[in-house]
Image 1 (cartoon, rainbow, N blue to C red):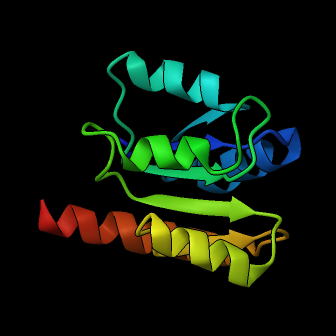
Image 2: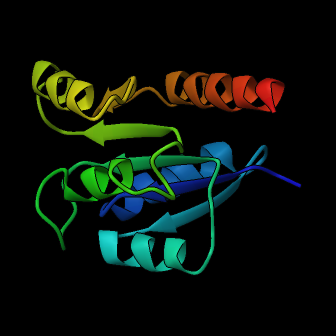
Image 3: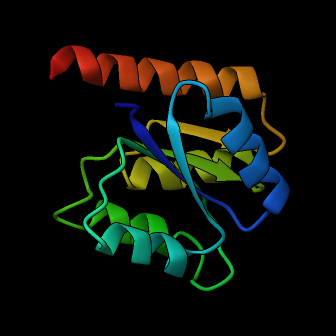
Length: 127
């Protein structure tokens, strides 16, 4: 069974890009906002990894990420952050939430694929 990635971004183009680059190796679930992503998670779905934009249309900046990282159920799921903000600002916030991987837009699809493969491959080896 393929590992699951939840990709959350309000940009249809970014969701399509993520779906396209990961579809061969992973099952990709996409959401356009925090509400849709939260609903999917509340249905007893547990992705192996979450890729999320920091600014989603239905919540305050970083709120979805904060909710994930403060949740008993989801706090240990690896998160990769996507953001349009300056690298130093994103790095500071990621540090606050103990997120090690982030990409500023525009990002290199090859680099994000390598990061995801590294995270999920290492997780598989540990299990």
